[in-house]
Amino acid sequence: MAEEKIHLTKRDRLAVAWRSTFLQGSWNYERMQNGGWCYALIPAIKKLYKTKEARSAALKRHMEFFNTHPYLASPVLGVTLALEEERANGAPIDDTAVQGVKVGMMGPLAGVGDPVFWFTVRPILGALGASLAMSGNVLGPIIFFIAWNLIRWGFMWYTQEFGYRAGSKITDDLSGGLLQYVTSLASIMGMFVLGSLIERWVTIKFTPTVSSVKLSKGAYIEWDKLPSGAAGIKEALLQQKDGLSLTANKVTTLQDNLNSLIPGLAALLLTFLCMWLLKKKVSPIVIILGIFVVGVLGHVIGIL
Amino acid sequence: MSIISMILVVIVAFFAGMEGILDEFQFHQPLVACTLIGLVTGNLIPCVILGGQLQFIALGWANIGAAVAPDAALASVASAIILVQGGQGVKGVGTAIAVAIPLAVAGLFLTMIARTLAVPIVHIMDKAAEEGSFRKIEIWQVIAICMQGLRITIPAAALLFIPSGVVRGVLESMPAWLTEGMTIGGGMVVAVGYAMVINMMASREVWPFFAIGFVIAAVTDLTLIALGALGISFGLIYLELKKGGSNNGGNGGNSNTGDPLDDVLNDY
Image 1 (cartoon, rainbow over the protein chains, first blue to last red):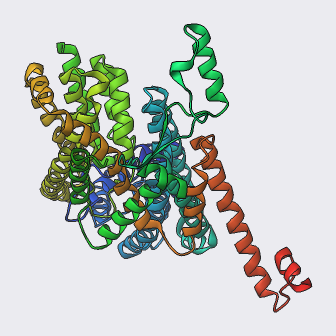
Image 2: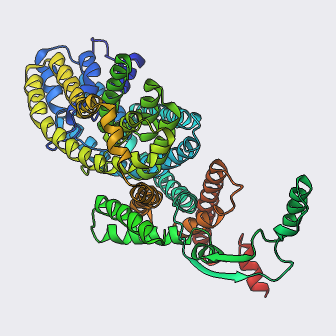
Image 3: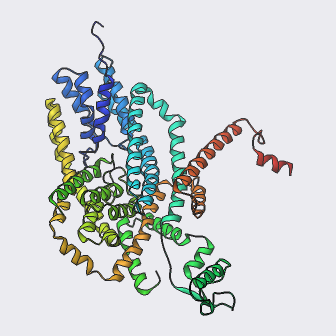
């Protein structure tokens, strides 16, 4: 060929990666992410095709149905860039080949992106930030925001480049163990963290008193027999340190009983109940409203 | 609220609305959106606390495929505005959370409307593609994103125009049993988000890790970062052992290589 080959520079690829941030902007019920996909590819199409006919054909072929996890679109974009580049340089790649690669990749990739990003990374970072924020610490939101965007942008740029270099060969890489490894690791870690989050952050306190036992003399602090003033406070603190009870009665609430089985048991049971209801196709919104009703009613009749 | 604050609130609401669909920078997550509203209105700390609590509720909310989750963007923006207007500070957080939940539902319907309105927009883009016009596609993509931004901006701006005295009056007229009960409900409602996530991820293989996480979390000295480190270590160890296990299987019947437990059992 006498003509020089057209290459997509790093600048072009960065432009595509930046635009893929807006992939879901025109998300619609007809062809889902198609508008954003086409929008993201415009810098590449501009560079690769010069005639109006070729440009229009390229735009139309990228207005087809597309939907995957928004970050996992990056490796697909990378592969598509490689294919379009070859095609612009005369390789016999037809529309169905391009569409085939896109459709072939989007399903499995969405299956990786949802558990990894939405169900592992976001709950972990979110819980970390939220637990700081609940005590009024501004670092919570800041850490969440910065860490998330570093991970996201790093992932999007790296995988787009990976897809671009691998080109159509990527399907072999994907069927290899790596994707499966990442997905299983994410789901293990996700489940582990979920378990601990439920223990820590689902709060249910049952207030009813189960028993109130009068303690024997000597097992509690006899407040009326303490010396007055600072000496009395000192004596009381010393006695408490020795394990004496502060009151004459030992009060056991229902919550104490449950906690002695395992802390957080009620929270765990509530979570299982929610899972069961969700599996029965009860809408999450209905469950959320129901829990608020239970909370208010339970408080009014005095069990919560 | 000063005019400048109001303008900034509207801008924050616009970003949250955009992100509600884009899901990239996470401006729509309660942690970020409530904090920003707090920042621009001078109510930082109560709003950070509200954001933290709402974040726990919204942890499991994610748009999967074409399904739409409850809308974190409207819930966080509107409840933060109500918290600020109510003027109760940290005390008002419980009520603001209770208000946020119906807002999340309202936001969900608004999202569905916006996603339907996007259909004619991509039809216009189709025509632009026919003409080979890059500019038109770009403009309509931006219009679609702005439409998603307005989805949150309009309700937020409407809230700003309700006099704060009215908001305060309504909030203060709520009886104590209702607000306290709502706060209790807020502590429990977190479980729904977790249940959604577990239903997506759980398999027989990973349940033991859930149990380990649950039990270890009771050791209150461990921070979340420590728990995260434990979680990833367990995962790596398990996958490594699993890989080793299948290799051994391939070695054909030589079952007691590299498996100390098996050796012990054989010696027994």
